[in-house]
Length: 119
Length: 119
DNA sequence: TCTACGTTTCAACGAGAGTTGATATATAGG
DNA sequence: CCTATATATCAACTCTCGTTGAAACGTAGA
Image (cartoon, rainbow over all chains, first blue to last red; front, side):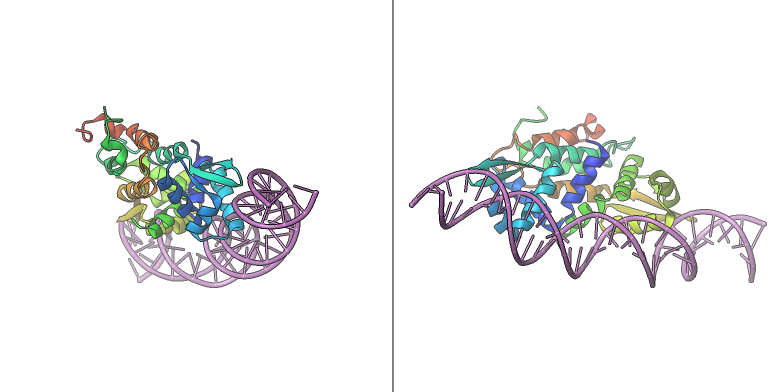
């Protein structure tokens, strides 16, 4: 991920309604949520939400698929991890203990309770 | 970290000059960089940079200390990790494999080459 | 085909963010 | 004390972003 993409992603997340959308989709999991459901969850008018969803999609943070009359949005987990990686890259110039908290933060994720990683 | 803080942090990072400042400080390490050096690095006028540094500081992403005539800024690694944690919290609702890439992204950090973590 | 529903697009308005230039504060040295 | 350096503050302007309302598009069922 280059600076331009990261910039778009952070700018997208720096907006109340868009951040709530991403959080809702991250917790919702890969099944995602319909645009209408998101509109109720985030309490934003449909047309306005559509604008934000477009921006999030363009920033590579969410993906969409049509299912009948509904459009289902889901979090782009790959894009999110790329963003985290961009932010913390080269954080350990001779001082590994400094950015350890950042890694520990993600370790708190349930992902790591299994033996999928750190095997 | 609550939503309001995360929002301020993401909004702060969603600006070209501020993102470059944070990246410069993250790679610089805990020793930090003087405001003047940052101004040259990011190529922003001093008065303008001051405005951005204030915003980053208020967002909890950087800290400052005075050393003689200079003011030295450094990355607030704790704030950064809190932000990452906020973004990815509850990402594993029954699908641990989904957010694994995000953790793997941070694992690529040199921090994890030592046995400080995952012991 | 017609109607209902869900979602998207468009133009216009209002509010806020970023830049600039001038000015002010703080520290160090002569 | 006076000057030079480093950084911060302020007011003004410009421009972009987010919201709103009206209208269009796409899909499913009668």
